[in-house]
Image 1 (spheres, one colour):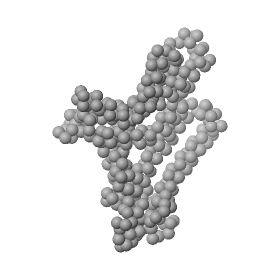
Image 2 (tube, rainbow, N blue to C red):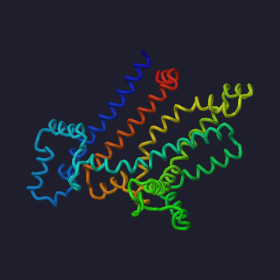
Image 3 (cartoon, rainbow, N blue to C red):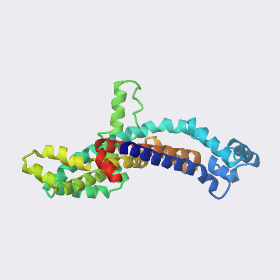
Image 4 (cartoon, rainbow, N blue to C red):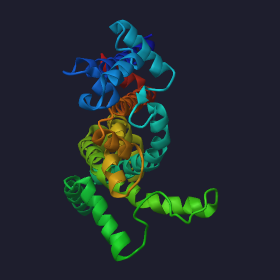
Length: 328
């Protein structure tokens, strides 16, 4: 019964968060000063004739009661269009669907790599705190954490592309690559290597430092001391004792950082000329394409909410008793 209650509370909170984003996306353009037509189309009021303003008011249902406008807005979410970009003359969902795959090709490997490396090396260094490896790794990653993402990307590009010509530095594929061949896939991998490494290095310090500090604190616990006195191997202690004590906060942090990696891809896509979600958002901001900006905000928020929901379910499955006690 307690587990069922927790599932219900978790789903209710997720639903409230999701509905809040939906409501804000609808009301913000209508509450801002000025003509809402300008915010919902991206066109300046000075650039539109009265006939055009009347046309857009009818197309956007602004001449109807607010409740009916909200109903039309919900229908655009339910039918998957997410609104209409008048600047690009296309449905917002079509524009996002065309670009989100490119962004996920960067962010998914980066999230998995940074999480895996941070967890593995953070456990080792936290368990052997104050060792040479721990001092060197912690100092290096604290310094790396202060380096901006764009500087990491530019540094890798200079070394790997311009000085040594080891990797391509722009786009997702070379012009001569033939789609559908093994060479095309390998060419895509080479083009993605630097962006993925850049985002991995940018995300790694926070993962490592969290795991290292939690492992260092947990390694002084009585259960770890007893395990050492029993002569258990270090690998077994890290896996069966330390990992169990830190896995929940680590998963929670990982779920919350997924959307940050999606947002962080804006800089990387700009540096490496990758036309993903980041480039689409940048273009929407520069051209004041508000429907497209709202759609990207909605999709990014959905990704964040779903990732947090998934990590909460995983935490409950891993240790129901401790999770429920923590919520009590």
